Amino acid sequence: WISLKVGLPDDAKGVIPAFAGYQVFSARSAALRGAGGYFAAFFSDASNVDLRDADGHYAVHRSWKHFDAILDYIRDGACTLPTAYVPSTYDNRPASTEESELLEFLREAHFYKLSTLVDMAMPKLLNLKYGANAQMLALLRGKRLL
Image (tube, rainbow, N blue to C red):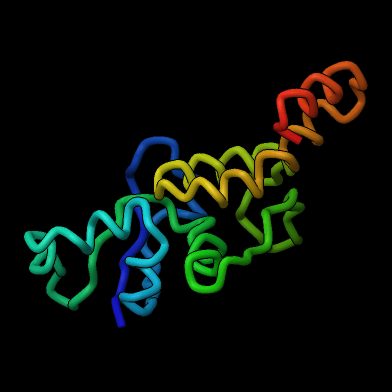
């Protein structure tokens, strides 16, 4: 098993306070290597073997907000795409739109070089953005983006 410490410092620019700091995730090394992209490259490089912190975690300097969904995808090829968020009474996380959540998710999927995950999320984003525009949807279908 590989232990990943995912997150950004509390004072990182542009980080919503509710998502500052770090979360620890674990996954089988075979799953991380088999996913391709970022983790396959990272764990294929022998010089990265000793890059663990004092607690034995590999640091991933990215937001942990969508990492659980990305890790689900890496583990079994399926994940739940993010939706809009409406805060509850005692929640310090700001409200968000489904479009903004998907854009953040796509940014992370691109970083980890998971092109099939990007291909899963992109049609949903395009439908949200252009759903009322029949001409644009026809153009996107013609380009095989939907």
